[in-house]
Image (cartoon, rainbow, N blue to C red; front, top):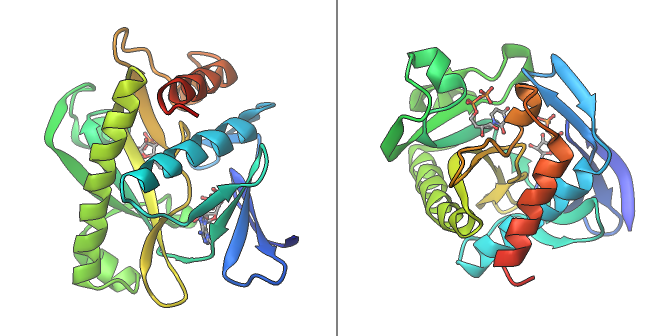
Length: 239
Ligand code: ADP
Ligand code: UDP
């Protein structure tokens, strides 16, 4: 079923599917990278955890009428998805200040954003994924104004749903990054992954950081942290 390798990224490998041109297999790796690949390590079991967490998240979103590229988990580390042409934008939603916005704008960590802030970054490693505005996005990608409105609305709806999902797991959804892609007919769908690599999650009671910041900041054990997230989601989604 698994065809040839299409692309190897920092966190996943992407494979063609034999006799199924409109599908891909995403294979989650054990590699962790931060600061645009400058900090690197490997963690046995990370690929499994991100694959299973992302699968749970996309299944939850589907139950709440939010479609994505996700079709099904194939095994511990691989999932079947619809093939898209990724729009090279990272759409970040922020409920609470953390990470780059604190440094870029001098906003104190933990400051609440009501309403949430949506930011666009141009997905281009060579340029360090710079922050861009809407007009830049029209120049740099093929999206129309209407489609960008749709993408931002979708990002905010996903935020509402995921805030609830994680709250039930006793976690605060601080911020996260989404990617969108186009199917063969041009329709835009939510793609890529939603995992502790791409979200900031803080324990609702203790405020403890329970995401890739444990790796970025060397403040904890990545595997036991991600395992804890998966267990909390499993306990709350009646899997
Ligand atoms: P990166 O490319 O940033 O190093 P990954 O290691 O996660 O990231 O690689 C996975 C790649 O697959 C990303 O470039 C992502 O945009 C792309 N991708 C995710 N979902 C799909 C999809 N449904 N169709 C095509 N490409 C996808
Ligand atoms: N993020 C991501 N991939 C990126 C950049 C950011 O998944 O290439 C996620 C990150 O995990 C966080 C959110 O997007 O949940 C906001 O990241 P930020 O802009 O604060 O950058 P960082 O401080 O993580 O470099």
